[in-house]
Length: 252
Image (cartoon, rainbow, N blue to C red; front, side, top):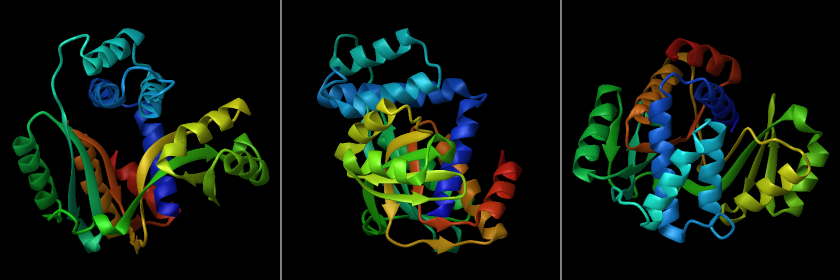
């Protein structure tokens, strides 16, 4: 998972300074609205909403925008109805890719996602073609400066985490999706800051990539993530950290 850790770190840093903040806000507003629609507007009983709001705050979204998104989800304000769907496909070198989408027009989005795949040496595939490779997990990324491996492990496991992996710069913490907020709050209570906390898809196997194939795959992922309706992209690549850093600089 070294590739996943490095890419998550790079995306976090890029997102914090992304000039396309309006697009980031649009995606977060959809996430908040759908979470509020699914399980209500109370963050104490809706962990998914709490996580979405936390991400919005990290992106410096105004409180008024957050409140309106919640009210649109609960029906207090009129809003667009979004459909949640997952697209599956393959990238260069046979990398498996899953694309999470929230859309108000599935036919339009399907055509656009298919076009992105085909233009960047990938192809869409049928439902279930790569889904079996991935398992949904709660995922937290913590900078190593936040504490020792033993301390972070103890806090996380006591709160329900299943595993912790140590990388060059970060700790990767994995848990059942339903325990994500519990683990995050336990870390916060101990003054441990999370670089990222989200529900993600963890692959059962990975494909190691060199510089050329790695650049192609990350270019495809970047294009998919830039599509308006795409919320998250998951893939089973593994790229050495040094190569990842160089590729990320080239495709910025």
